[in-house]
Image (cartoon, rainbow over all chains, first blue to last red):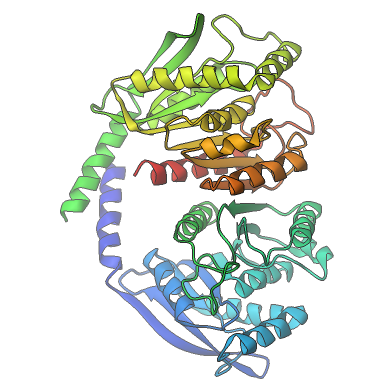
Length: 257
Length: 257
């Protein structure tokens, strides 16, 4: 009966939560570079809670990631959107986006440094229980969170949504200390079979706790209503979007126990 | 506030549920063959509810499937364990199990007939909402539920736990009317890469709503503490067991809406 009463109170708190999401833009640094992130949390509840880093897709930090951060805040987490590219560096079109994403994918050390800067900023927040931290990312950000794990970062888990899983240094898999969940479109033409095989081998050889889900009928960018371009190879898929969000929630329930 | 009160009442009902699982052995027929199934439901709640067919692994209907059926009943479903082999036909060892499973895998029409007989028996139960029915299966049973779907059976979804996914007649994928979720060990040596590729092609070409999850570090029979034999290729994996059960629950939440 006591448990039920507790659950009842949690429910009431839950109802209140949705009304009080605090958001703000946050400047922070990696080396000498200023980055502009975005913070979201529920200020109607008190006390420490798990933190979730959100890493953007190739277009940089947009309203899309801010919406995801707000959704995470509604779930009770402190969410922080990292800015990998730098303050004011926001690609105007897909050509610029491709060039920027390519630059960081070619310089994994810089990519790791930028991702870690975001993680540090999240962990500095006094509301964050630093023993319960995860990172999620979309497309380019999905690649980034795996790279963050490969850097040996201290966190409980990473979730890659339709991210490229390739690595120029697969031996770095042995640095991974957290659980890895990859969520992929079964028909994603940007997910090359050789990269998938190499990723699986990396996880296996490094004895990582890993999982991968393939959503039938889903191509690249399946969670994004506007991925910058829409064609047969990159398109929103509502079913896969909802299913992958649920998979992330279940994963968080497990890793934040 | 009304919603919270409702949730509170549901919670109380939930607490009561676990205490009252009715189970019984049920004889039924496929053609002239008598089969011996197992039924489980919560008799402390009234009214129709979704039904779940459970198909056994190669050792036939054992306590393992009965435990799963009881767990499903505790979740509020009517669960019915099918008997594919026939009343009294219970392999005494892995040699007999291999021969029996092989017989049915080589005669997919008979396998489909036996699976459909179980489904019909489940649907006949007055507690079952026949618009909300699923089938799950383990190993041999995981193969069987996909075959049930390929027969064109009317149900909302099937879940294959570490089941072989091969088909001698991949064109039959076009008969599938339900959603398909396959849960597989990433290191299952019985899951041949060619079979996986063929399964994916079958699902894709037939425009099935399908998903597949691979659990890192998991081999064959990862949900079964006693799969009949234990070696490097077939072994219980608690993490993958729990994760796959959660994946099934999430899938049911979606398909039984």
